[in-house]
Length: 315
Length: 242
Image 1 (cartoon, helix red, strand yellow):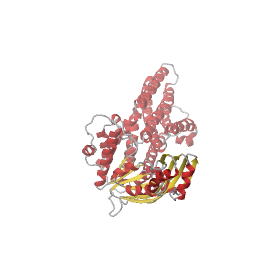
Image 2: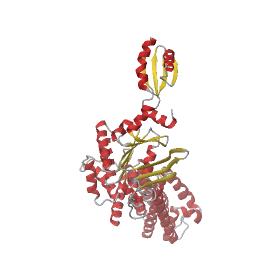
Image 3: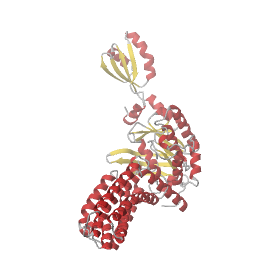
Image 4: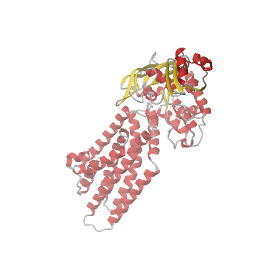
């Protein structure tokens, strides 16, 4: 174990190569390869997709069953001194309850071998708009304040990599805006900020690179706009309530507006279409021509989970 | 580098001490200690042909077999157990701090609470029984040795397993009560056996669990403490932190 570790020139800030992680028979993460550099990178996926496991792998909290993880070119499981480069914001809200924020963040600075931990802690707390001289103990802090304390302790060593697991959880809308601003600013400063979320709208506000996780795999990669395109391009399923479902279904098939149709009963049918806009334009005139009364049009899969299903299963 | 390590050690020691020393735990062990002294005082009022043997038996049954393992178990397992349970261990683990410093801080904090919790009643019991000075000194050395070794074992156990209290109780019941009586072979994995060997050798008393000479008994306690400390460091190096 060397006394000092420096970032290897040219090495990605975080690099995962063919990384898998199994817990018994459960595959939490499977054959993930990705390099992460400066800016905000969001891991997006439904609950249980493997986001937290991937975050934990990224910072060395857990070791891969297979594959290679490197932080600035170093193995975090073998060289603990690379933890100087890493700050973590865990998902849970638990802190050392009987400490003040200043003492908690100073402790992080001391363990991170900062020259003046108390001064560094003051600066970190200032950076997240918390009063370093607040005499209250952490037990008395609100969720939003605790979240900011967690960020302050992650920042106190001046890390180049910040890993935040669901950082917006438990925050009210105003606190969310501030948290997003803070994390974006850190990314703009040249740090690698890796966050996880299962909500696309949240991730959109980070203006980040997106890694979509589904069933332990890296299912897609790109910008939020690209993910939005995926949502638009994939087949959409829509439920229609109409007084003669079979009649409307036949006409839709005849005109080639839908690729799939399921008549549930006399008044309900589900259809799949590749072009929602064309279907929407044609539906009302068609109903008029056939003398039908459409009571309801409801998208069945206009959410992120359906995008994940599509990416993983192709359905 | 050394200054940073000393600062980290102090900070961690304070943290472990504050985390493990809950009012419930400290209150519980103080109550048990008080009951132990009261029992010893009651025994001391009864006439006894061999008062030295009675003092040795009380030191064994109440001090080394009960108080020392109980305090070591409660406070030793709490050091890492509490942090692992509430998932705050990550704030220590994901730092460049050398793992032996974390281990030393945890063991030091466990001793800081356990030693007074065990030694004060142990001494109180001997004073209540009117034991001679050599018995008191032997009890001090043996009980301190048992507490040092015991806390080291239970600090390691608290890190390795999530059910440290259950495993710890199992160890106390099996190794310290049952195997300790099994001669110098099986007894060599018993802290109680080593500690009682010191007392019986120094005072010339008898015990069903004393099998070793004083030097070997002292070495055994040191070896147990060192091995347990090393186990803690290795476990920290390989720990998967939630």
